[in-house]
Length: 147
Picture 1 (tube, one colour):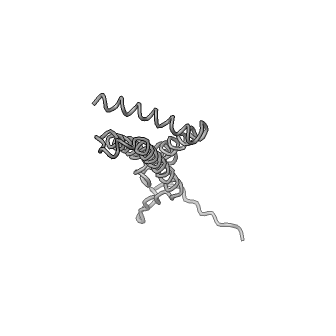
Picture 2: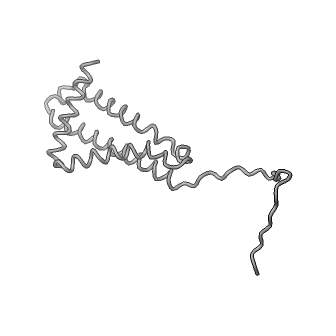
Picture 3: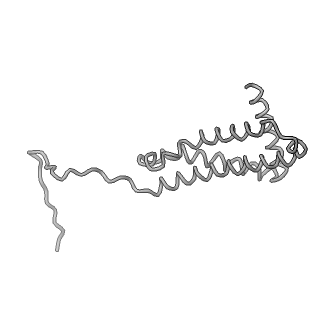
């Protein structure tokens, strides 16, 4: 299992270098920033208001889905390739690069969606007991606007 993770981290580094060549330094950094910001907003941003975690609680699962998804992508990438795949290693790497990139962006968009849904929702109305009466001895006041 240790070989799996060392190969995975090597591939992540190689993927970052390939994206840096494709997008440029700033484009690759922006893509990583947007991914991490989307995940952070989707999970930690739900604590802005008290009712938000109940509205979009699936936002808390996004970091776990992100990690598990990348582990599954890497497991599939490291699976024994067929003879046709071995001949076209560059195309295979490009396919997994774009798959990982699109999966990362999908997780980031899901995080932003969780935050937007939660922040735009209204808090649940407080439960009102229709039979409630003020306690005895309370000073009652009736304020009527001037006419």
